[in-house]
Image 1: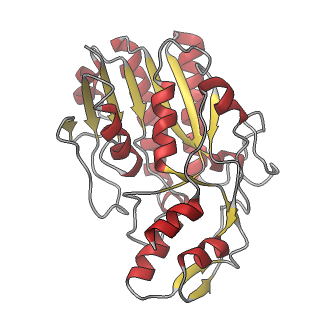
Image 2 (image 1 turned 120 degrees about the vertical axis):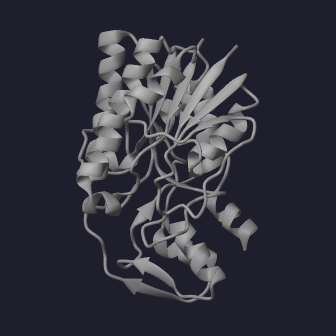
Amino acid sequence: MSKAIVTGGSGFIGSNLVDKLVDVFDKVIIIDNESADSNEKFYYNDRAEKHLLNICDYEHTRPLYEGVDCVFHLAAESRIQPTLKNPILATLTNTAGTCTVLQCAKEAGVKRVIYSSTSSAYGLINKIPLVETMPDDCLNPYSVTKVSGEKLCKMYTDLFGLETVVFRYFNIYGERHPIRGQYAPVLGIFLRQKSAGEELTIVGDGSQTRDFTHVSDVVNANILAADLQNKKPVGEVINIGTGTNNSIKQIAEMVGGRHVFIPARSGEAQDTLANICKAKELLGWEPRVRVEDWIKAKS
């Protein structure tokens, strides 16, 4: 019987992934402690087995890894600004938590771990389009702790033979994206503000650009990476974006309505744009959803 674990499986990306994995694997196990404060609600698929646990809790999570073929590791202290306020928690969850996941997987003989990382690893020194061979430039606790997780994945592959695949996600949006609080993803904030009849709040002057990537495309990449017969992505870092970008001001104009500008925030890149040649080559993956089409459908 094929079995998968999804850490963070009740959150935005994780729950969308679980909804697809229940048709791919015989058994899907969710590990999630429901700590994400930007989520208005958590999502569970009735066909998956759920465990309200912290990924750092080796004693209670370790037995769940027995007989598992693939682990999709999405649980994290995510987003930049909250980790500036609590870098200790970010380090515990994103670094020690990832090490715990990898160690449990190694001990249980899991075949592959797919790790969700971030494009914020590229920082400011690298010019777009961003390629996986570029040096890290971590500007904040979020990127530092997520990149340390990448390096742990590589070490577990090189030293212990545990198959790992690392994805660097660009700005993900779509169904179930968080909308609560000022640090939720920008599209979630804009849509929440518009529905409430409020002005859209643009950070800085709105000229900063992002590669907006739909959650369904992220889900598809994860499913492709779970093909254990394909060894090409093992040990690799792979961008998951669209290869196109839009300014925050452009996104606000697509959503529509009045907008205001608020002070810029530290620790964030000016521009992101993914080179996705590696994802195409190693996984046969292509993005399918354009942000302008999605916003139009939601308007």
